[in-house]
Structures are given as C-alpha cells and as structure tokens.
Amino acid sequence: MSSHSVRECLRHALADATQRLGAAGVPSPSTDARALLQAAAGTERPLVLLDALPEDFTVRCEELLARRAAREPLQLVLGSAPFRRLRLEIRPGVFIPRPETELALDLLSQHCEGECRSVVDLCAGSGALGAAVLDELPEAQVRAVEIDPAAADLAQRNLEAAGPGRGQVLTADIAAPPTQLLAAAPVDAVLANPPYIPAAAVPRDPEVLAHDPHRALFGGGEDGLEVPGAVIDLAARLLRPGGLLIMEHADVQGAATRELATAHGGFTAVRTAQDLTGRDRFLLARRAEIESTSEDERLNL
Ligand SMILES: C[S@@+](CC[C@H](N)C(=O)[O-])C[C@H]1O[C@@H](n2cnc3c(N)ncnc32)[C@H](O)[C@@H]1O
Image (cartoon, rainbow, N blue to C red):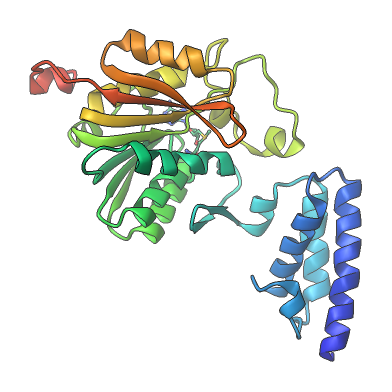
C-alpha cells in the first residue's frame, strides 16, 4: 500500500469508527476512535505520521471497535491507562484509575513538609497512586494495601515497573491492618482513593456499572464513609507527627470527611482541596504531635 492509500484507509476507518462509537453513546467518540486505530496499527504515533499498516489492521480494528461500542472501558480494551507520566497495566475486575485522582500527587508535592521518603497507598487498586509516587519521587519507598488479591497482584506489577525494588503491596483489609504495615510507621505521607460512593447512589455510566468492581465503588454505610473513616483511623496510626494524609472523596463529602478527621482528634490543619473545576475532592490533614505511645499501643496489641 502506498503512503497515500494508507492515509485514505485511515481517514475512512477513523470516520467510520467515530460514527459507530458516537451511535453507541460513547462520550468521546473521536478521541477513542483514534486510540483504537493506533492500537490496531500497533503504534502510539499520531495516525497522520503512519505510512504503513500491519496486515491484520482491519480485523484488529473491528475487534477493538466492537468491544468499545459495547461500552467496555477504553482502558480495558487497550489493556493500559495513562496516569501522570506512567502507562499503567489494567486488568478486568480491577478499578480503572481516573484522571481526577492524579491531583493527589500535586497536593503531595505542594503540602508534604520535610522529607517524603516513606509513603503508604491505602486501597491501592491497580497501584496508580503508589506507582506515581515511585516514579516522581526517586528516593521514596511505597507500601500499598489492597483487599482484593487480583488487584494487589496487579498493583505489585505496576509498582515494580515504576520503581523496581521500592514498592511492596500487602493484601489486607485496611480495617484490620497487618503488623507488617504497622511496623513500617512512622511514615511521611498516606495517600488514599478509597471507595466512597453512598449506598443509594447508582453510577450511570455503563462502563462503570458493568466493569468497576462493586467493592471499589461503594464506601459502606448509607453515606459511603465507612472505608474512608477506616483510612483516617489507620493514617493516624501510620503517620509521623506533621505527616500528611491526602484522601480523595466525592464532591459532597468535604464537610463530612473534615468532621471525621477532626473528631478523630489525631490531626491538625484539616482542610479540603478542590479539583480543577472547583469541586471539593480531597481531604488534607496533618498528623498532630503524638503523645508518648508505647510500641504495643501503636501496634494495638
Ligand atoms: C476507588 S478504588 C481506587 C483504586 C486506586 N487507589 C485508584 O485510585 O485507582 C478503591 C480500591 O479499594 C479497595 N478496597 C475496598 N475496601 C477495602 C478495604 N477495606 N481494605 C483495602 N482495600 C479496599 C478496592 O478493592 C479498590 O481496589
């Protein structure tokens, strides 16, 4: 095929794919169509720069388009998701990292006082937050905790790829933290994007409803704040005095999460950070000075 024919083929394929995805209700049909065509062509280069296509391009294109038109999330179809500077491996059954979560890393660099070498990622999912910490802070060590063994396995792979030998994932319930984690205290920062959706709020997007695991979405209790509450409790046990907790939450949970942190008694400088659209999305709190606690008390033995 001449490079002119390649361009013609891609132009038609792009128009057709965009139309099909739009008809299927995909919210960003043209962007997704481009990404799928690039995957079918086996490249990340812009389509306009391609002057050859693999033999199975059309078959591969059809296969990927059919999956996306059936509203399988783009990241699952591609097998990867962008997060900060990384491209994370993604697998079915594990929560797909969202762009809004990326802001946690900016908050960490803006607000972490002093060294930020030991970081814990609670409710780690694919390990997005922990992997980004390893990538952006070359001196940091990360411990991540995830209840679902399949997600924990994926998180370990993503952490290892981002910072070989510097990340460890523990498969555990954050409400019953393993001694191995508690023994790592005091740490400099705790990051978390826990499940927080209230029980009665049913997500509307088919991608979310059919593909994100229930346990990754609903936070427990009517207000969805059971797991976020457990994050606050555990962060208080893990952080050094002055250490920083950054926890994502729903835009209606700013006041409630501040109340949880304040009522705990172990935090100062409790505040809410907004996302780029001005909505309340992150709880920030600093660990207060800790009154002399014995090792046994800290480990809760
Ligand atoms: C909203 S997802 C976030 C995943 C990842 N932090 C991210 O931002 O992409 C929440 C994750 O918390 C895990 N999870 C839910 N309850 C948990 C618990 N009690 N202890 C540990 N992990 C939990 C879920 O399995 C899911 O992977």
